[in-house]
Length: 449
Image 1: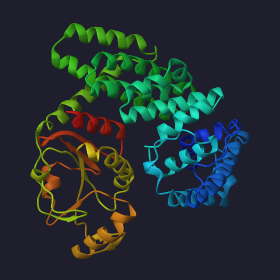
Image 2: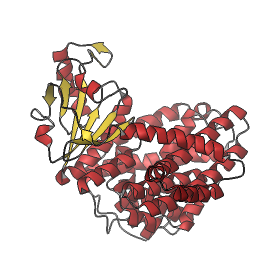
Image 3: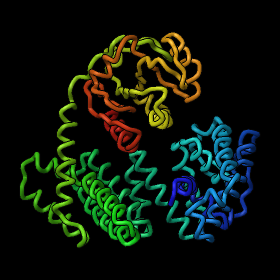
């Protein structure tokens, strides 16, 4: 499946209930909760989106050549689709982030709110919307998909009880093996972060079985030996991701019999086509990375060099003692950095009153939007354009001279996120625009301590 189809499928998957439950009854409910001009405008766009996405999905199912060259069949409609999605993002009603209680909303209203939240990457309202949709949907496939997504959203919230409530065996068994493996891995990681090791190991073993099923399925579907090997290697990294922290801790504890028992349990879940030697090599590499990362942790965070501050008064680590501090090293030209901003907005809204402070740190780059700029002009563009455009609601500091702070924090790639506990010690480091659920769980853990 090529890039365009992949993109369309991803967008469609994000709002799968908009397509899967189109034929379901709305139980005769009247619309009324979204009865205002801004939501009316968004609902009109949502109706067009529904129509176009459903048409694309239908074409892909009916025409075997569609996946080979979607541009050929979509033509100008693809650009219209892009423009529509962009327009929807601009027209998301401002009251969306504060919406929590969806009792009494009609079926159609819930679908519209769900799409708005997806387009705006506002994860907060989604779980509440899904819980209400589950009450209204009767189609088995739609219901299972809704429950699966609700379980994933609960994992992001750190609400493991609700996650397990919806991630039943029936729901997980109906999911694709790879998706099942990733969800089970997330449960394992969440329980590991919460220091519930037995639960973490239980879910890890189930995740290994799911990844094994995925490896068999992928191998059967892939005829290109080179791609098949790439997929096999990627599955090895999935095994390593879920097993390495657990095996590292057992090894550090010196309990050889416990490690042997865990390894034996894991081996039983691997398919015949997978060699334990290969899995062990991947796990060993991951454990070496864990050891390297942990050397940086639980040490006092380095003080920041002098910065020019936007969105707040001058900040220092000393002034933030007693808070959990998320430091985000970014640059204006860094697209992965920009991708992370919606997640940070969400975290600030959810956790600021519990003690989280987010701080963005960058340096003078001498360029902005492809043009050369002097420091004073760059600072002005940050303040007047970049920050409002990307809805950055936390203070931003621009180092006045050089990159001393980035060097002190060993920043080699961005975005580079550092979490500092209430005592001023580094407790988490993450490079890249990934693992948002893991970062959020660490935020929750530090706030609870």
